[in-house]
Length: 371
Image 1 (cartoon, rainbow, N blue to C red):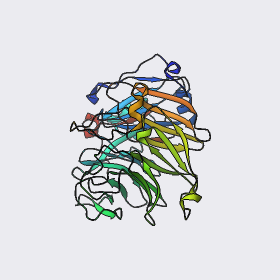
Image 2: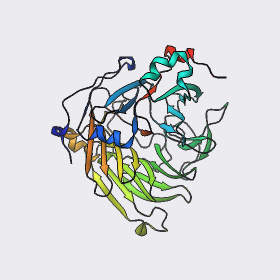
Image 3: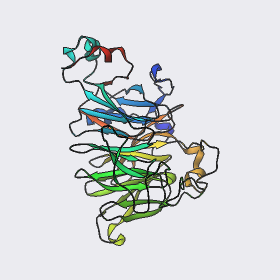
Image 4: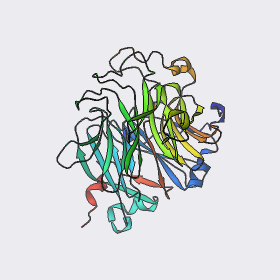
C-alpha cells in the first residue's frame, strides 16, 4: 500500500468557477498511468458540486479542470463516447461531443489546447429522484432511481419510466426505502444491483446498523452477497462481479456470479483501503477505485454507528487508487483536499488526454450552432 509520503508535494487548485476549492496531490506513477492509458478520468463529487477532469498530456504532470454541476452523482458515457450524461440535482444533463470544433469560431481558442470537446445538448427534468448509477443501452439511458427504489429509463414527458424494482419493494413512492444505489448492466440489461437494506419501510436504511446491505442478481432476484456495510458500485468485468463494501473500505470479487448457489460463486476480498470505497472502473488487470471521507448525517442523527471505517478516521482520505486486481496492491494514488471530500462515480474518456467540457452557462455554448 502506498502512503502519504509517496505523494508529490505539488498542489493544483480547482477552477474558480466551480464555487468550490480543492487541491490535488498524486504519486509519481499516476500521470504516466493516465498517459499510458491515453485516457482522461472523469469524477463526480457532490460535496464540491463538480465534475472533476484529470488528464496528462506529457505523463509527468496532471491537468485538473472542473465544471460546476449541482449535487452531481452518476456519470454515463455511451459506447461511442460521443454522448455524456450527468445526474444533477433534479435533472439529467446531456452533452454531445463536438465533431469538428474548428468549424465553430467560438471554439477556435479552446480547440487549440483540447483534443475532445463536449457541449451541453439537452436536459431531462426529472424532479429530485436522487439518481445514482446510470448506463446507456443501445436505445435508452437507464438509471438507479433511489428515491423511488427502482431502476428506471428516460421517458420524454415523464419524470421516469420504471423498468425493475426489488421484490421486497411493494410500491413506488419517493421514500428511499432501501437506498438502491448501484447497477451493473450486461447486454444492455440490468444484471446486478446494490442496496443498503431489504426493507420496505420509508428511509429504513437510516439506522444505526450498517450491515444490512446486499448485492442482488436481477434475472432471478437472487441475493449473491449480504450482511454488507453500505455496498455500492457493482461492476461486471471479464466474467467476474466486483463491488464495493463502502462502510468497510473494501473491494470484493465474485468469480462466478451466475452460479446456481452461493458456494459456487467464490466471494473473495480484493483488498481493504483507507476510505469509503465508491466508484469503480476496471480495465484489464487494473481497477480505478474512488475513495471518500466520511460525512455526518445532514439531519444530525446517529446512523451506521457500527461502520468499520469509524475506527480508522485518522487514515481516511478522498481520492483515487489504481489497483492491481490480481493482488489487490495499490500501484498509484491521488488525493483530494478540502471540498472534494465525496466521490460518487468515475468514468474513463478514452483516446483523450486534453478534454474540455463546457459549463452550461459558458458564453461559447450560446455561440455554437448545428443544423
